[in-house]
Each structure stands twice: as C-alpha cells, then as structure tokens.
Amino acid sequence: MSTHAPVRVLRTIRGMPTSDGAGVRLTRVIGGTSLPDLDPFLLLDEFGTEKAEDYLAGFPSHPHRGFETVTYMLDGRMRHKDNHGNEGLLTPGSVQWMTAGRGLVHSEMPEQESGRMRGFQLWVNLPARDKMSAPKYQEFAPDAIPQLTPAAGVRVKVIAGEVDGTAGPIVQPATDPVYLDIGLEAGAAWDYRLPEGHHAFAYVFEGDAVIGVGDEARPLASQEMAVLGGGDALHVVGGTRDARLILVAGRPLREPVARHGPFVMNTRQELMQAFVDFQEGRF
Image 1 (cartoon, rainbow, N blue to C red):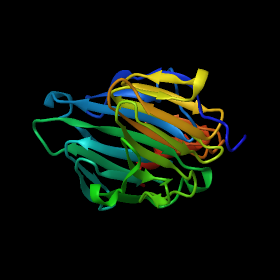
Image 2 (cartoon, one colour; image 1 turned 180 degrees about the vertical axis):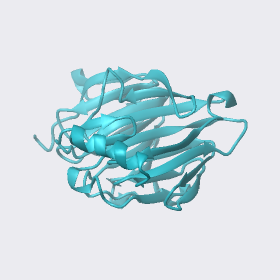
Image 3 (cartoon, rainbow, N blue to C red; image 1 turned 30 degrees about the vertical axis):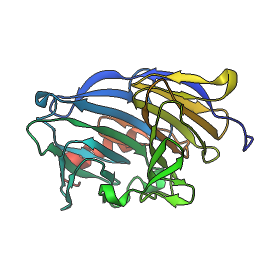
C-alpha cells in the first residue's frame, strides 16, 4: 500500500434500529446483517434519545468475555458497576474502555430520569493470546481527553491514537486503535494520515460531510457510516452544514471469530466453555 494513496469510501452503511439490555433503543451500525464485523471491530451501537422511556431500563447485569467494550458518552449520565469492584459514572464527553478478558459481569444504568441520553458503544476484539487475560477498566473524564484545532474550522477530540503529536489517553498494543471525535464547520477541510494497514470507518452523527478527493469524493449524510480503504491519506470536508463524526481505526487481528451474545472467542469449543464458566460462577 502506498503511504500516500488517498483513502476511499469502499461502501456506506446505514444502521438498523434495534434494542438491547432491558429494551434500550439503539441503532446498530456494525454487528448487524449488513456489516457483521470489521476486524478488529465487532459492534458499533449509537444510542440517542430525549425520551426517558427509551433508556431508563438501562443495561442490567450481564457478562462479557474475550473482547473490549468502549463507551463514549455525548449526553447524559450512566453508572457502571462490575463484579470486580469497579464503579464509575460516565458523564458527557467521558470514555470508558473496559477489557472483559477472561470474564466479568457488569451493569450500565442511567443516572437520570429525564433529558437526553446519547453516545456510542464499540466492541473491539482481543487476540487469542489476550482473551483470557485479567479484566481491566479504564475511565477518562472529559478533561483527560485532549482537544485540538488542527485546521481552521476543525476540532478534534483524541480518545485514542495521535493527532499532530498529541496522543489520546487510551493505549491498546494489540490493535493500536485510533478513535477521534471530529467537528467540522461547513466547508472546513482536514487531512489526516491513518496508520498503514489499519481497518477504518467514519460515522457521521451530526450534519453531513464529504470523504475523499476528486472523482472519489463521497458525501455522507447524518447516521451514515463509511468503510474506508485504498490508502492512508484521509481528506474530510464539512458538508452543507456543520458536521460531527467519529473516525475509528484498528489493526486487524485476522483470527477466526466465534461469537454468541456477550462472548467472543476463537473456536466453538471456547465459546461453549465460556457459557459453562459463567453459569458456574467463574467470572
């Protein structure tokens, strides 16, 4: 791959409405029939509503094994608790990066009874060697996430990866992730170099934007995701109005995936063992 080839939009995807937890309404962008996964990413859910009945029941206690969950709150407050003694409150602009490893049981419950609840949950796979590692929990308040203005009319929050020498607080050597929240004024442009060989996507959640150059430039509407490829030189422009999008990239693991519900392993046998271990209280 040329280190100067422009990034192209390989395909676009619209999320599917679904519900999870105790009936929380979500839009599933990765993990549905149109895009089951994008190695190393297993799932991307966007949640966003001003109707309390859509989120009040929250996500009661449930298990995970074999991957990581990343929750990025845009609006609202969510309380996390797990069976390893970790507890934290996610507030607007905060990020929780939880490594389930060999297994934990956690809950995520809203700490509000009205107002807007909005954010993303991303699942990142772990390589076989790390699937049974000890669970870990990282939480970062908004002021721990650097915010830059790398070009006129462009604002970037660096959750993971690096922009102009400024690194985000999240580090994960297995997949070397990039996770950026990008704000673009209408017509404002920004160029960014993705790590070579990473799988990447961009998801617009406010306004509209354009990705690519020349004949390859593709407009993206709100709630539309672009799977990126073809190179590592990304050119993104705000559309007819101000835009906001997340840009996420990670090193692919290229390992077999056996998944069912909250467990993601490499073989069916490991998956069955995960259910046994959970039922027998080994998480």
